[in-house]
Length: 75
Image (cartoon, rainbow, N blue to C red; front, side):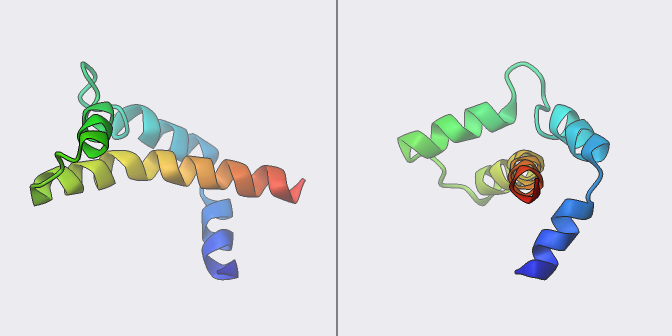
């Protein structure tokens, strides 16, 4: 677990923010992530492509959140 935390802490803030603003929000109207989260809440994520989209568009946000928590936890 320490190895994973170390890798996440060494990720560049700018790169993560850039990934969130591009991959995380693409396409911009409406963002796929919001659409997929709504589908998840309704139980409509049935196709593999929907799960892949949720993973692809959600990963930058999850990494940014984890990095933020680890960063402020270290302070």
